[in-house]
Length: 131
Image 1 (tube, helix red, strand yellow):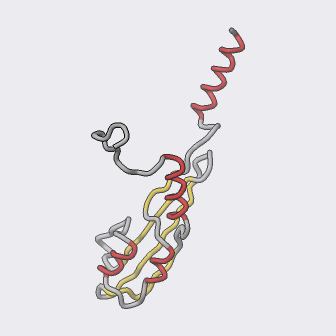
Image 2 (cartoon, helix red, strand yellow; image 1 turned 120 degrees about the horizontal axis):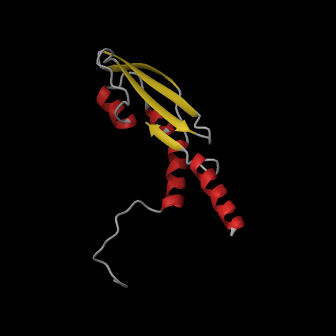
């Protein structure tokens, strides 16, 4: 009985501290590499929005700059990698862009999520049996 209690106490203490496993967490914009390849000088804000999505940091003081920030927590200690991709505009037209992003993480994350959790489709509660 003591051994069982000891094993239970060790298991509870290690899972509570996160020693066993912490799932990676992605936040912000995961920009696709092919979308950045399609980015061109002279594009409008609407075209950039269609390619990259809305910026994660809208700044009312710098309306001619869009920041796409993303973070990834990668290890058990909670260390995060932060990437910032910036698109600069002049008169609402792209002039340049720079920064860094996670180029392949969107595809890898989508595949990993399907493996972990299954397809993100609603279950039809009306279907029963072999219909």
